[in-house]
Length: 268
Image (cartoon, rainbow, N blue to C red; front, side, top):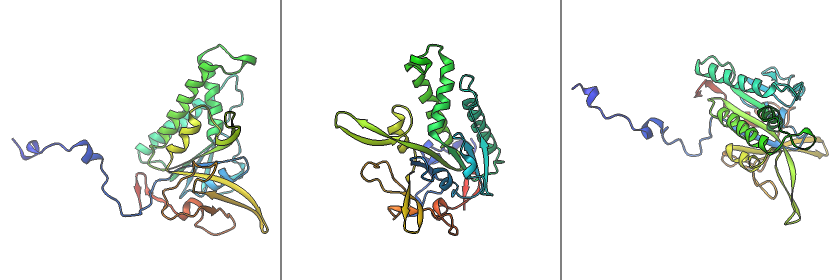
């Protein structure tokens, strides 16, 4: 029996373990979601992701990011909700990204999905094709929402496995707690996804816009407080808030803390 044959096979743990990193070392791959109300700078501040960016525009608001030379936009519109195509288009784009990553020909460092709220809508349009029965007024019925949530969940989780920086945006909404006679704030999406989404990301930031004596200020909140308990970050000693000033020089936003990728699957 040869020496190779007598060697014990590597365990699954030894194959998957990446070793202990340096203390306080930052995660090199961004897994982030920017949550905020409309107009708080979600899309624009997402473009601070390192390197060259691919921007998947489900929201139809990419005009605010086209001025950045390192951002390439793919529009994924839904021109006719009665004959939906956007969800299938989005899945095809994600499939192509996976293929190019595996072939090591994907030319981008970061992928931005803008945003989850509209992705939920186009996934619901898709799910309406599965069952012709409708609710009142011809809208979605209960049997359409579970397939929608399943599709959206699978899409997001699959994208988070990509060896590139991945950033999502999503709107927030006020949700009434009738028993407590109060309101709380959650991502604007369907069902249990509202509470699950923030936990799928390493970086979960609240985007805000404030009026100051020097003008409008855009910022991220890293630390969960009050109604925004979902905020969190893996950045050591991160501030409570980070101002996103696009008039300032780099680094700013994500590029302040995260390094560009050396190549697919590797970090500098």
